[in-house]
Image (cartoon, rainbow, N blue to C red):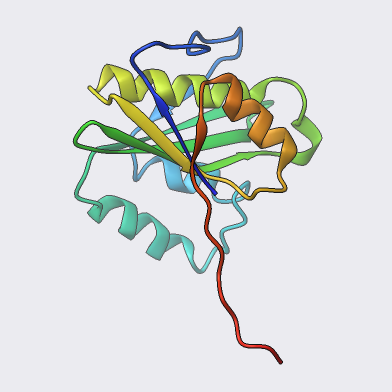
Length: 150
């Protein structure tokens, strides 16, 4: 499903006590590759694609003991901001790191002039849906993929 929210009235955009680092791509990609399960042989293509992306974008990450444990990416087009690659390492879930990443990305989007934000999430991801709803995200539309039987 696709969720959307207005950035005009920030609900939870204030940062928590977490130290979130904003990094311009393509420097962000190698740092988050392991967390995002990007195979080493695929990393050059992933980084090249980020370097060639024509619109403004920025990555966010949180480190613990030098390891990236949470990340996300914001891409901007006109006054819209898309959130992508949102992930928290399994061992670090439930500690507010996802909230800190989303807050930092939305604040960055707003700082760069975005008026709305959107993201995709699976309908059965209850924890993520609850997090996004706290930021004011509502369902824009749902979709599904058709497949042949057999």
